[in-house]
Image (cartoon, rainbow, N blue to C red; front, top):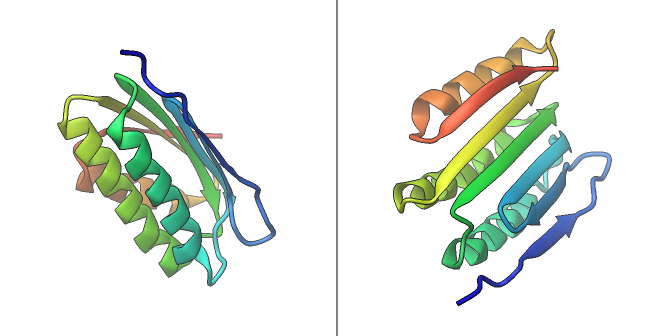
Length: 126
């Protein structure tokens, strides 16, 4: 039986990142400091839950965020929890966490997430 194709997209705004889920590929990029981050990530996590019902054998995730607030950081934890569940079910998840070379806060946040979750998270300086 063939997997259903999945496509989900949220346009970037001045305060929320762009989000794309396209079969085995996910990308979240942009500024993440809006007070509506919880709502933004709720939409993404809902789509990840739908995707998890018929995931690709391998999922590639790229995250490139800047200007994260506390709400964003907490919401990303929930996103990573969903990815970890998927990974624990035998569906490989590879995450690339991009950060600007002079942005120690985003790099350190990536290191924290890497230590918290049992998924492959590569930290990559831009």
